[in-house]
Length: 448
Image 1 (tube, rainbow, N blue to C red):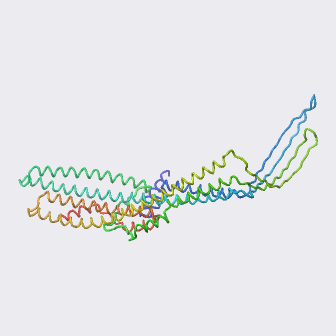
Image 2 (image 1 turned 45 degrees about the vertical axis):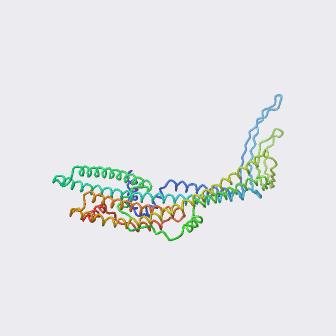
Image 3 (image 1 turned 180 degrees about the vertical axis):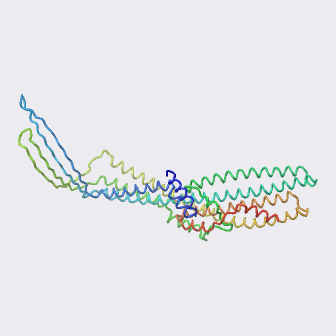
């Protein structure tokens, strides 16, 4: 029975394997998103408190006293007791600092909302990078494994040729060195893939076995619109949560400055007091008393002198406003640089992917030609190995460019404040079943 909740959690984690489902699960479990959500709830309470300052306050005070009185020189001890209950109600009529305080609280709430949106975008970007890094590392391992198998076959062929006298010993040693180097690359690729899978499991809040059985389609590339970078910059300027957060910080700082300045202003409150008292006597009377009283009045408070504290508070808020303005400029510059870099990186990766696709097809033809030349004796084993190595390098670089294009595109969308479920659905639609032996079959076709 104790293991049941854990088993249900694991089952739920394993069932959510489409990218939109993984994104939703990752957002629910992301600590930065949870922290930002808690900050937003706290900001909502601060705004409620700022609004409540306009309302009345009521207090009940109860006092009881017991007195023992002895009159000199040798009088009789006379105890008496008194009880008093006071209800005090205060309603602010004019307090100039309340409105800017509410404005600051409202700006802080909107700032917390922007921070939550930014945290969600960053969490989605981390998930996208983790998924694509796993796919990329898996392709690197597939390429390294195919290259090791190709070198192994060439080593076997070199040994057979050496045994019949058609190859020299240095050729065998060179083939063995290639195999050893390929084995080392496979081990490194396996370690990298294992690390990337662990990172993905951490970011996605659980294992992703169904996702690991899928891969990005060979011809799938991100649908980057033919917009200029200025269009992306304009969109980021309007929708970026980080920039909006910085703007709201300036607004909140300005409201705090107005609030501090109004500390000089007078305040007016309406007061109501209701008192009920009774006693069993007093020092001057032995007769009990009981009575009530009520009073309504207005209190005018005019600040006269605070030892310079008010001026110091105003100066502090002005400095904080300048700080927020500087951070706004920094956020704008950082956003502009980030959008430009992501835009250029996406275009560059797309161009590389298209060019490398052509290079991969050309190199596959070169491998076939070298294989046929080797069979008829006009090409050497080294020529075939070199052609196969270039083919696998082209395929590895093509895979890297394709996945980098998707990663840069998701980063560009996140910086522009536009990354959402639609992007995950678009990428999920480009996923196909992963073929573990695809590279080996491609190698066989290129060598046939």
